[in-house]
Amino acid sequence: MWENDINVKEVKEIRTKTTAYVGAGAIEKFYDISKELSQKGLNKVVILTGRAAYKKTGAWDVVEKALKENNIEYVLYDKITPNPEHKDVDEAVELGKNFGAKAVIGIGGGSPIDSAKSVAILLEYSDKTAAELYELKFAPEKAAPVIAINLTHGTGTEVNRFAVVSIPEKEYKPAIAYDCIYPLYAIDDPALMTTLPEFQTMSVSVDAVNHVFEACTSVAANPFSILLAKETVRLVHKYLPKALKDPKDIEARYYLAYASMIAGTSFDNGLLHFTHALEHPLSAVKTDLTHGYGLGILLPAVIKQVFEARKDTILDIFAPIYGEGNENMTADEAGEKMREWLKSVGLTQTLRDEGFSEADLDKLTELAFTTPSLDGLLGAAPIEATRENVRTIYAESL
Image (cartoon, rainbow, N blue to C red; front, side, top):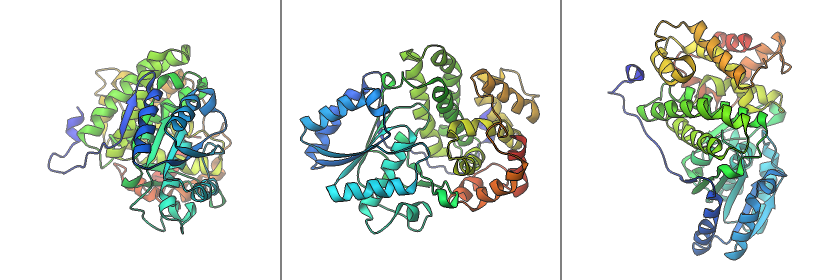
């Protein structure tokens, strides 16, 4: 059992801070949130989103009406793309500063919400840029209030202190984690997620599985991160096939949204390690690579690397995939069984299929060790992160 991998004499910090509204119709809670913002004098907001989903899902109909009813003015920045870039954050910050924004709303998946968190910091540090923030040239202690309206079930960013923004000219995709960017409120409404395409449905759910795999096998793993990991895997294993079969299945979307949320809390406590540290260079180099898909490609090879160090925990949390009574499973078998499950939900590509080759291995390995912040992830791995084992993970994922 996973308890065997916990040192009861090692003190762990357990975190959960954001108030999240989860359930079909949760978007209606935005009326109450808007009323509170107005009462607190936060009557000007900047909104970050992508180009279409915020309208297509119906979220905007409620958000715009609630803001108007509570006399909250807004400016809209709707240019956020997957793997958002620092220049877009700076542009949104300038828009917000000129408008006098006092709070930030992110509507969408991880990209708009992470960008909103970044803008919230830079509104308070008006002499700084997003590149400086993500190259860790200063450590913020304050940010404008953030409201996160989540439209996907994978990121978990709506309930934690993490954010990711790319610096493409350096092929950097760093992550930040600061207490000041916990969203004040989060909305996880599965009724807003029924239009997610099949590929995105699978990719974001695989992202959630990676979050908890890392959070329960890292050096920072604690009983809470592991508890949430077990439930996340159980729910994704049960409900992802249902959502893929019927995108309008509200029950399936509900439990996938909940799984994603608790996975976000899991890695807020247990942190991340190899799969995220190694995926960030992939989607920094090839910016059209979907983050969750890249994680899934790497996952079997990462499991093989860390299996012996956290065997009891891995067998426990992945019991829905591996089955019971697998005490004699080997690292190779564990990696292969995960690969089979990933194929069963539609993740069939390799790094080679995505355009990478042996010629990229040294560059990717170097980026994993030189991109700002990724050293922190590598340092949380349950085995020593050497250039040799990082390169091996990339090579086996080709």
